Length: 401
Image (cartoon, rainbow, N blue to C red):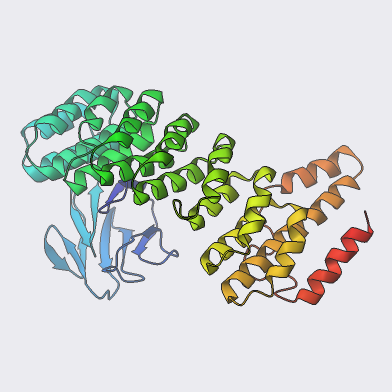
């Protein structure tokens, strides 16, 4: 089966199998392949299956389609063709079953720079752990930065934990392309050894590297990183502390609640916006007092974050403060409060429905709804920002207790 390998600067390499229909490529979400760069038109081009092969067709895009460096309106694709769509690079593989790991490893060692980069990309997509040694060699010894970056990313795609030490050796490189590939690979592997290795950079002399380490640990979503990050809250640099707060929210570990609560009480040292957002993401009722208090913060962005966080907790205790927030002078805060109130209302109604259910089948049906997209999360709550209607609803709930 034919396949397209998709590379965009700063993003993980992906691939998509091509069937017997067409595949559209562009910037909007309606496309089969969505490219995230400003040089791509909303609906830029398509790849269609015809005459036992695939043809790329430009859909009157602003910046055109280039195949192997030549601008084309349409072209039947040959194995290995490189398509430039905006700033995104797409590589056409005619038959993924025909790809042999041994051939790619030879190409990685002896090919031109472009061929070595392609070989590393394909080994990441289609190779096995047997390719790790060749990729490690390319990471360490190849002189072309694009090949090194492709090798780093491929090692992550293969998920070989043996590569962690080599990848960590490039964590603080000044080569942005290579560093991004290393970060993505470490996030993908993210075993205990990886977490400890990244955490060591929280003590790097360069604050920018410490920020990167915090960001990377957050991306792993690994709770083993929590204590490392909590310790880093004492960092002397505000930007590092901000990155740590965000990372703790990404991990969503309740063990960070105490540290985050203390941070909320020290607004000069910690960014309240991210403290409140991270507390909301952990979704613990223990955070309610701190988040409710933040509804009165002088900063509208903090009040907005607090209103949104309360919706994540779904706690009925926060309904009354949110109703009060509907009088906030900032429209963004009022909107966030109304959306959160609708989440709480939906949660309450589902709870009532579940409690009144009888029979195993009915209860199973209600349980299956948990986690579904809820009314109100689309930004159009039932009562909007009407305080009177929300107060009436709230009084009805209190009367039913």
